Structure formats: structure tokens, C-alpha cells
Image 1 (cartoon, protein in one colour):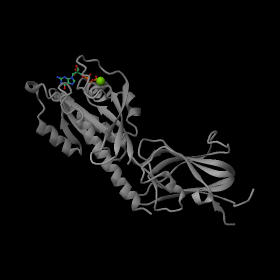
Image 2: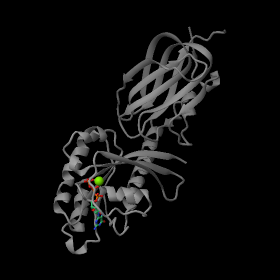
Image 3: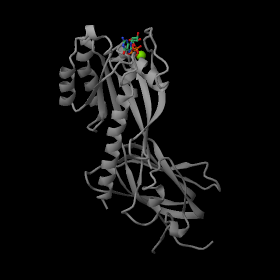
Image 4: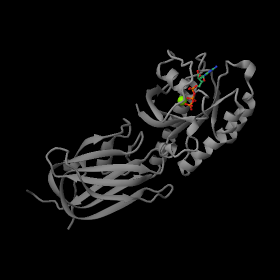
Length: 186
Length: 141
Ligand SMILES: Nc1nc2c(ncn2[C@@H]2O[C@H](COP(=O)(O)OP(=O)(O)OP(=O)(O)O)[C@@H](O)[C@H]2O)c(=O)[nH]1
Ligand SMILES: [Mg+2]
């Protein structure tokens, strides 16, 4: 049995639903924040996810940061030594999808050659008629950039746990691979 | 003069604390004299472990075998309890892909009842520590 711990950053443009996701995940679906209150600074939430078919788990230290801070120095420190990235956009907002490239660039400069598991998450699938970013397009982009992909609606409580399960699985896999490497050293 | 390695459990050393634990790769693995067994970190840095000696011993060299460790800090305490640590050395290690880090720290002879190894940062999400060695004169007190 092993309990891993991972620093997880919630990134993405303002109003895409990062805080809504964090709230929903923290309360196991009991709380959806309807009104938009932009995040100031950084909020931390800690929650463990177990890995199916094992007795292992990953405890996430999830940092919900402010979308408006993409270019601010506040985030520079926060992004140090991150373990996994959850990159959120709004499927009804093209700009928020296009900006994912900028968020990813930030990751690349902070990670210094280290492989950081990441998931691209399209939110607000409940707004069917207003969709402008197609699933296929986003999925392809994610693949090209080595990210996992999923869509969710925090509002309708659909798939809101999926990003964290995906990240937990990737991080756990990474640990197992590293242990194999450690075995081969002596 | 052939010294004793005080970090061996067979020399009476005991693990006091480790911040990470995978049942299959416990921190005791760094004290068993075997480079094939290792302790893994399982979370964010810093990570540390503390080794206690059977009594206050004299040490003149500390060494570590590890992988992916970047900044390492070693501290000692001469107290009866694992408190009041002071720095022995802090160093940035090099990383070579696929090769165990074998780092030796020659130090002016010092006394210690506890040694604390702090991994402040790493080259990857996880590191392994295979052995630690604290060499000193085997003497009777
Ligand atoms: N329709 C719909 N609205 C959502 C969904 N998720 C979040 N919202 C709404 O989107 C707005 C913004 O959500 P937040 O979670 O505050 O956005 P944020 O990404 O944290 O924004 P910043 O903190 O400014 O970076 C809120 O009014 C939410 O209620 C969803 O799945 N569907
Ligand atoms: Mg927010």
C-alpha cells in the first residue's frame, strides 16, 4: 500500500469554472456555486483519490488559482515543483480554449524538462446550444500536447471527478515506472 | 584505520522518522547495508528521514547512495531526543541518467546521536535513497 501526494494546479482562463470544480470536488457534489466570484490569490484544497484495483491512493493538494493571473508573477512561485496539471476551458468560449496554449507554455517553462501529467478539461457541456469548441478539435489538440482529455459539466455534476481520477492514475503509473527504474540501478 | 558504519541497523542504528512510506520500500532500506534495497519518496518536497544511534558517536565521513536527489541537507543532533538539529552540510548533487548518485561528504570529525537527511528538491517527482553511511571510529565508551 502506498499513499502518494501530488501538487495539482487548476489552471485556465477566468470564469471557465475552476473554482466551481474545486468546490464540487471538495463537497462530493453537494455544492455548486451559481454566482461568479473571481478568485483572488490562491485557494488550497486537499483530497485523496484511490486507485482502482489497488490499495494505493493519491492525495491531491489542489491549488485553485486566478485565471486573470496568467501573466502575473503571483503564479510563478506557485508553479514550482508541481506534479500534475488540470487545465480547464469553457466549451462556449473559444478564447479560453485558445489560451490553453499559453497556460501550457507556462507549464513547460516551470517544469524544466520533467514530465508533468496533465489533463485538458472542457467544461459547461450543459450549454449545448452555445458550444463553439468541438470535442474532436480539443481532443486532437490535447493528444498533440501529451495531455489526457475529458469534458464535464460541473453544473450538472457530470464527470466532475473524472479529471482527478485521470490525473491520479497517470501519477500512480509514473510512480510505478520510477520504482522500476530505481530497481535497475544497483 | 577501518571505521564502523554507524548507520547500519546491525550497528544499533534505528529509524526515528521518515516523511514518506511505501510498505515495499521503507526507509529502513537505507540502513540495511544493501544498495539494492531503497526508500522511495512518495510526495512533495522537502522529504526527510532521521536515523538515531545507540549512543553519541564520532563520525568523520557521511556518504549517500541515491537517485534523482537535487538539493540534500544533512543535519546532526547531539541531544538525547531528536531535537536541536544543526547543519553539517548542504549540497546540490549531480544527476546522470541511469546512474546511482554516490556522494561522499568528508567532514571534520563530529559527534552525533541523530542524523537527519533532508531532500529539499529533486530532479523528478520521486527520488530513491539506497544507502546512507556514517563512518566513524569504532570505540568503546
Ligand atoms: N452553465 C455552467 N456554468 C458553470 C459551470 N461551471 C461553472 N459555471 C459558472 O461559471 C462561472 C465561473 O465559475 P468559476 O468557477 O468561478 O470560474 P473560475 O475559473 O474559478 O474563474 P477565476 O477564479 O476568475 O479564474 C460561475 O458563474 C459558475 O457558476 C458549468 O458546468 N455549466
Ligand atoms: Mg476561481
